[in-house]
Length: 263
Image (cartoon, rainbow, N blue to C red):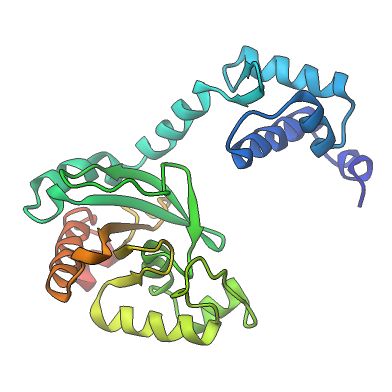
């Protein structure tokens, strides 16, 4: 279906184009020229320029010498999205109060399709510089946070979500790339009570994570995860972090929810 046919049923084509443009800038990781944006959108440069002007006026994009990039307003909106949820507002104080987690890099993620999307992070005293800034994604099948969320689903639900013949990217030489391998990993996570990413997303980094049910029925399910340098990730520390994350999830769970009654 071509753009014209799609837009024939689109109630607000300009809004749809603007969303696509913002998505392109988010994926680019740097400035894009007007010519590049117009080509990617399949629009005339004049139409693309008008979109950029409107978005620039709203602070959604910025013009630089190299082209257009996301504007500060997008960061404000991202923060506002996360701040809607009581658990994320309380997340920081729970981490600070934990004798284990207060020194760790702790992240909050949710499941978005087949990805873990990162929403918040607590910078511990020995925090790591990782490639998972706020708003970034990792394959749920490989990341500890994604696996923690997938492990709350049945095998049948996981297969339906990701596909029986899914092949996952080999981000490192340790990455699990098959559905059969993932289901084994999820079974182990359910038995332990926390999920593990043993250098499958990043070389030299071990992830540990647990699920966190939403506070209100309309809130998304979240995951709490910690990243540890592989050289420091002995069994005792991994287990200690896993139990601390479970305690943090308990502190952040609505006491009147079904999840709290299961604990």
